[in-house]
Image 1 (cartoon, rainbow, N blue to C red):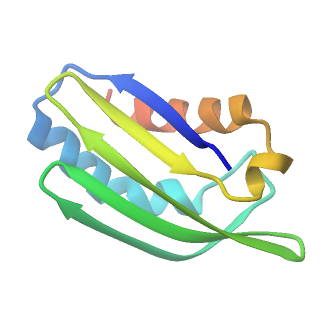
Image 2 (image 1 turned 180 degrees about the vertical axis):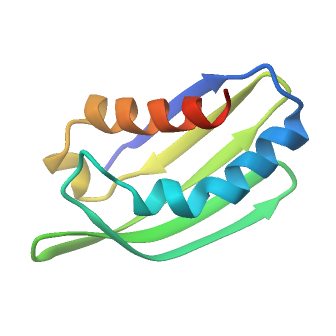
Length: 108
């Protein structure tokens, strides 16, 4: 399995970006619209400006753990995520597009 990396630039204060991500992460994970996936068992914790997260994604009879990090710097945020077996079923570009558009929407 390969980790998907997504880097999103921002022009907001780092602390504000952290707050926006923290407040919105549940909605982002639960609203996986556009993907035939149900999300369960979400967990997250912050260590400084890096959030570690994990969840279980269910698609039909299959379920897979997904884990990753969101690192916030002064100028961008980097999302690294291991999609587990979903990587084989959902094109990485579609997942990147969906995640990227939602996060960019939060940062406006």
